[in-house]
Image (cartoon, rainbow, N blue to C red):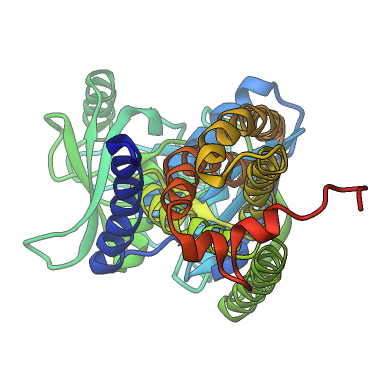
Length: 475
C-alpha cells in the first residue's frame, strides 16, 4: 500500500516544476544573459592618484547608480585591488555608456566675465550685460584655455565650449565657482514647452537654493552663468530672474541624448576621484551567441552520455534519472528566469559551467541511492521493502555530500569576484535543488515504480535483475 504522502510529494514536485516552466514560457520571459553570452562592453578603471578604500567603494556605488540609470541588465561592477571592473552586458552604444560610467563630473556654476572666440588670436565679441557687475577684460590671446586637470574652483579660468563633434566653438573667461554640483538634488531632461528645445530641469537642496540665489543676485538679471562640467562649458545661459524657488532649468543647444546624459550624470553625483581607463574590451553579440551555442551543445552532449550510461548500468532506474534531470532543469530554468527579472541575476558562461558541473553532483545522489538498494536486495530483501529503508540510509550520505558542495560554493562566492561568483552561485543553487529533488521526486518515484512487475522483473529493463548482480569485487 503506497502512503498518501508519497503520492502528494511526487505530484506536488511535478506540478511545481512543470507548472512554473509553463508559466515562464507563457510569459515570454527568458533568463538574463551575461556579457560573455550576449555581448557588451567591459572596462577596467584605475584612479589617477592613491586613494583610500572608502573612496573606491563610494566610486563603485556612484558608477552602479549611473549604470542602473542607463538601463543595463545585470551589470557586474566589482573591485580588484585598486581597479574597478565594469561589465555592461547587452549595451548598444558602448562609447556613450563607457563615457558616462567613468566621467568624473566636477560640476561648477561660474559667472561669465567675457565670452571669447574659439580662436585665441581673435578679439572678444561680447561685454558684460547691462546691470551686471563691471569686469576687467584682457586680450583673448593672453587667455589660453585652462586644462581640465587645472580647473581650480577658486580661480579665474578660461574654458572652451564644444559642439557635439568635440570642436571648440567658443571660449569663456569665468570667475571663481559660486555654486558646486552638490547643490543639485535631482535633474531630468525634458523639452522646454516655450522653445521646443531640450534642456535639463534641476531641483536644488535647501542650502543650494541659498547659494544659487546669492550668485544670481551677484551676477544680476541679464548676466550669464556658465555650467562648467569637467572643464568644459556645457551652456552659458543668461539669467531671466535673480530669484530661484528651489529649482531651475539648464538650457542651450542640447540634443536629446546630450540633455539626458547631462541629467544622468548630475542626478547620480560626482565621482570622488578621477579614473583612467586601463583596458576596454568589447564583446560582439555574435561572439556571445557562439559561446552560448557552444555551452548548450557541451551540456547536451554531456547530459546525453550520462543518461545513456545510467540506463545501461541501472536499467529501468536510469529512466528515473532522466525524469529527475528533467524536473531539475524545469525548476532551474524557471528560477533563473525569475531571479533575472526580479533581482538582475545574469547567466554567464562560468554560471553555465556551474550548472553542467552540478549534473555530476545530482547523478551522484542517484548512484548513492541505487547502490544502497543493491545492498538491500543482495541481503535478501525485496525491492518493495528496500526502497524506503535504502533511501533513509542513502539520504544521510546525500545530505553530507551536498552540504560539502554547498559550503564550497558559499566560500567561493564570498571570496571571489566577477564571473567566478556566477559559477559558485549556480553550483550552490543546483546543490540545493538536488536535496529537494532527491526527497520529493526520486524517493516517491522509485517507491511507485517498485510496485510494478514490469519495472522490476522485465528481462531487459527489470530493476531486480540489475540490482541483484554480483557485488563489486565478487563472482
